[in-house]
Length: 117
Image 1 (cartoon, rainbow, N blue to C red):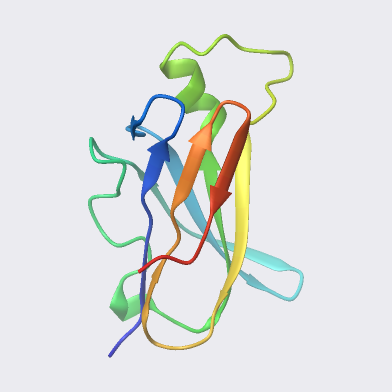
Image 2: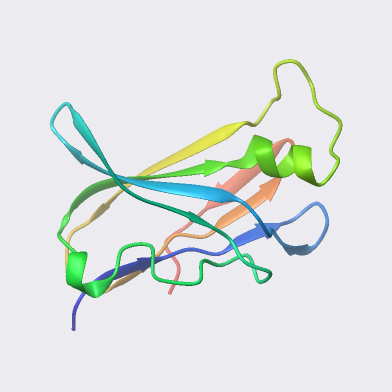
């Protein structure tokens, strides 16, 4: 089996998928942070392609960055200055060649994540 990475973003405050969230993936090595890809969630709160496809998979430390503030602005959540949740980084390790799924459950004042399947 080869490894790859996916996500799913759900808006728990509205009870629906979070469409239009910009997501960036970085690979971390020591002090360096390499940008790999930027994607946007579709109508189902997923990306149209794997975030890190099988042919690019390498074990290591990664960071997904979810641009939640842009999404909250777009759906009309009244902004604060500064917004409580704006950019949400999730740093995690991938140690073996398997499917890694890192979902984000989002509301204007909280979020959670887990290793999904």
